[in-house]
Image (cartoon, rainbow, N blue to C red; front, top):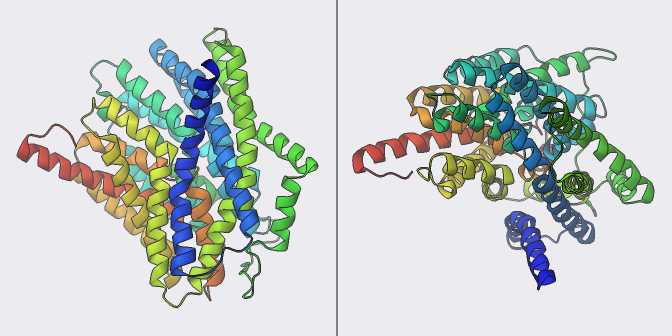
Length: 512
């Protein structure tokens, strides 16, 4: 009986990543077979990649639930209860920095940036830059919570500053910088940072956790954009000068969607040497998070690690899952997105690109673990007043709309800043009209909307479209879809809040 219960539990947990990926596979298969009527190239390689992606998600999420989340969230609550602002600021910075370094979504976009820039932008250096910025942002957010300032006093000036910095940055880095703000808050960061915010609001007398507890995730978004713009300026204008545009369109008679260099990389990743190298890199990525959590547990709280063997197994599973997931990206999600982009760009009817972009954006958002986590936390803190499933649908609608508009931007060749700055202006305007309780939640959902599922596929889709539409450059035009997917949920969630507030006042409802 005990073995049966264990097997049922394992099957249930394994079903979660399968369930997350199934809508994406369904949309891709329907379009490939019924709309485009093209066979999947390298179906064996794609299938292996998708299986590795699912397995990597399973081990990664299982490890988080066993080791990282119980210890990290307990740390956050205990530090908040002690009320030491100095420790809270340091903890907020360190835990966010370490979590961003370990984020698979951040790794995915950094890998693509290094590849598309021919090594001009270095993968790990970009990730460190983004992590530093996110850590500083969360520390500022903690200070804001303690002081009790409205969130828009900080975030509206930040987005105005981004708009100004856009015109000072080299065009090659702008889209990537916008994307950086969307990926820094992902599967690890969102629950840990949300725990700090809600715990902090609950511990300060007179504060409402619903209106004051959210928003920390939103603080982790603007600074990475500014840091990456600065990183790009230094990278491009030092040494041999600015980046020469790189054209990596897939060959017209492609028998494979993976070019020779990518095939070699994937084969090496699954070889004995590749496995060792991959594990070492995964350990490097997860080690800062483990060290940060253990340091605060042992030397700040001065408490032993509870269930130490379980925690150790959890961290090992995180490392294993991260390696398997990244291997799956190279064989599965990246090639899938590029293949779909290749065929869609060469179809007779470009409107299929819009339909596919909307459906894949919606299905990715519904599948995102970070969106599920933040929606459930909102429902819990609001005592059921805000329904988590309705909130997820509203976020998914924003993601889908954003990705569709981003695809149009690639097709039209318009500069990205026209759309993004217009999006910021809409966000600023709707912020001033929204009920207070929804504002912080909306800013958090923008950060949580683009994580471990959405980022790899959507990034590959953008680069694939830009590689196969004449006159587009994959580096300048291919990035940016993540930015669209992180801005529009702010608009849809605040719009949902305004509408719900109006309906509640009219009809006396107590659920939105």
